[in-house]
Image 1 (cartoon, rainbow, N blue to C red):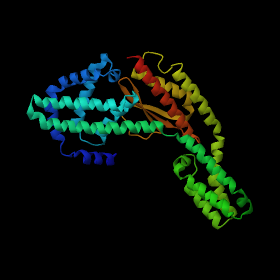
Image 2: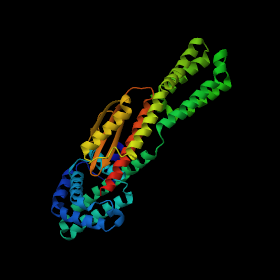
Image 3: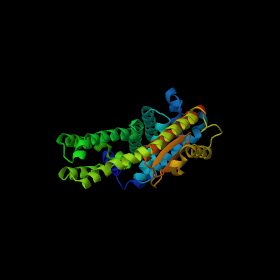
Image 4: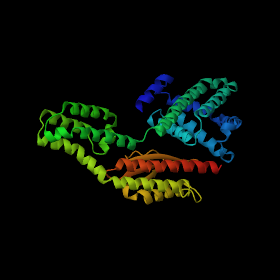
Length: 365
């Protein structure tokens, strides 16, 4: 985050001591803000592809939010807090599926309308240029975070990585059985085992969550290769076989998780039990808690909701949106052997909830 902020400051030549200048610029443009916002939404509504995202009955509310956003942009220090404030708006745009091109068009229109005020009062020009510079900064941040969300949504599932990695490791271990039985090192088996460990490096983190520590396995493998004794073999086998056994023993929980996930997603998407009654934020959060507790109560230690990104550590933190509501769901999972699968199952349920809330938002317009 700090590196991103430093680069943005360098690109746009932002000064750490320009906060008072921004506040002064905000004061100078304040008399024109209502007029600018009226014209801004008039122009957006002229584009049918953009107008579909703007409920007419909520324009007053949207104008007020836009003004607050501009106030924050010009009156807060340019730091991680402001970056996250801007990023949150970008994430909201991503969740309602607003094309980033339309997002940029909005910034283009707003900048033109602000700059046009200099024709009425030429003394405003330097202040207006400063405001437009920060609008460009906000646009850059929103583009970055929008596409970061898209990349995240398209990334491969970590549990699938674990499944593939465990198979690679297990097959490598099986190739060495003759060496273990004879206490004689088979150079070819040793070479293939070490090659497999190298292939598994990208999956180091997911394997570690399952109790398989590549560095420990490699160390015991080296010890056994140098001195093939019963104790060294026992250490090596323990570092591989015990975590694999724990995963096998808890496999029925993973299966139960998968079935619970299918039931829950069916309930959410088809039976609409997340949104079957009049929706307000409290109702939405209660329904989310009920669904998760019903399907994964055994695997969760806590579930909490936040308006801002939580500072505490949780296993799962997901941003959800419904109309003007943006809120975080934060979940702590129990320490189970198949925790990675549980986390992914809960994460997928939350994705189904996110989609359902988005569709309901569209229906209510």
